[in-house]
Length: 78
Picture 1 (tube, rainbow, N blue to C red):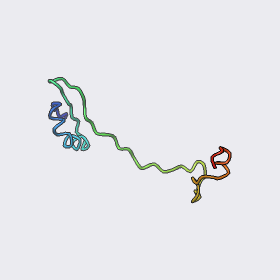
Picture 2: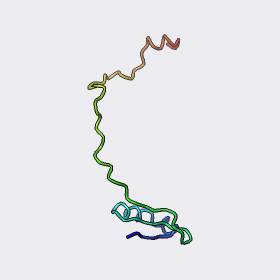
Picture 3: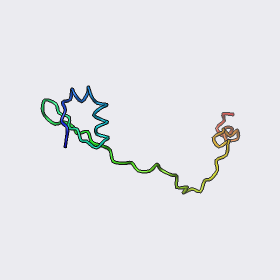
Picture 4: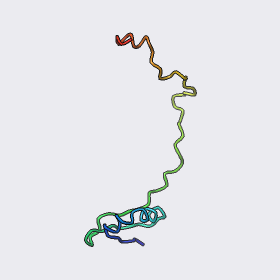
């Protein structure tokens, strides 16, 4: 069953309404008696992403992002 609230009430009770939506309830937000929006639960995002290892990288060197002096000379910086 949908819960209907006014825009003013939704602004005042937003945190509680979000908790209700997270619990599975749908909240219809109205302005001057006209439905404007619906607050609904977000579907389960599933398990956290796991890197696929498509590039086969299993080790990143400690100095991976260090500036290379030879490269800087090529830009006439170092």
